[in-house]
Image: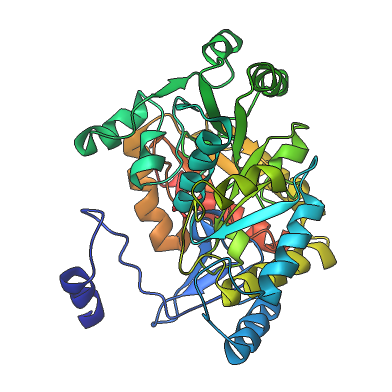
Length: 397
Ligand code: PLP
């Protein structure tokens, strides 16, 4: 109780009604309060804890790297093994000729870097994003929040970046707005905060073609979809489209704060001259975070975790869709939006979830659906138990 009071007094708040669940520890698919109450974690830190909480391989890597060395020098000057090895592995797994990673601290910073890079490489200024897109909360990333929903969040922070426009996701007709003026087009492969909106694969391909035709950089935001969430290591591979630039964060750090911008060496080299130091970040690519991210990636690969993601996602989908309160389930791998079509029900459900021991959430632009995005390591028996709890909660609506 005292800690909660001090949290409200001394920790900067972003919400008028924070969840206020105190965490004592977390393990696998669960976290626990000091009183020992267990919660199924259906948020996973918003698609972060893909390898499960307190994954021993990640914990070992963090401890080892912290003992070897932590921060030594501003990013990009020293040769640090965790960065080098992680960048090499990521380059192997990303599609096309992407062979280089610029490390940063977070998703929003990765987006900032990608936008600057597109402008710098093309020498153009216009940036295009999708309506209902979410790319982060810094000024540049916020500028790319697509109207109309994004407007509600950014209106009070204007003026933001100039020369930005948004087009409709999955609308072929809107691709004509991408022109020789366009530096970069930023697109989530699956729109997360819009409430899990899946791409039309033909449209994604047409988007690629249009960007190539006019010489605009296609930037995929894989911050929420990356590292196995959709059932492939990257959603770009799942939907068969290769971007010029990929933004990574969230699960990329294996539970530690880390972001990355992956692209071709010659594109990323635009930051090295006229002026040099095109983006400076002190802590970007922190060795402990890179060691954690690499350990998490190796865990996913060695244990073939991603191969089971589609089947596990389907188990959730087939179970919850049978409940009469559920109108629709939108899903890519283990990223699900369960649509109730009613915000009041949803808020009530969140309270019931808390009582029965489930942590879920709604989406920034969609408060009529709840989120299922657990650690990818969740087991089949855990999914069955969790679905029974979800049912019990939905019955009480
Ligand atoms: N892009 C997407 C698709 C996201 O979902 C998020 C965060 O939710 C971000 C970018 C921003 O990442 P961060 O919160 O690390 O800045």
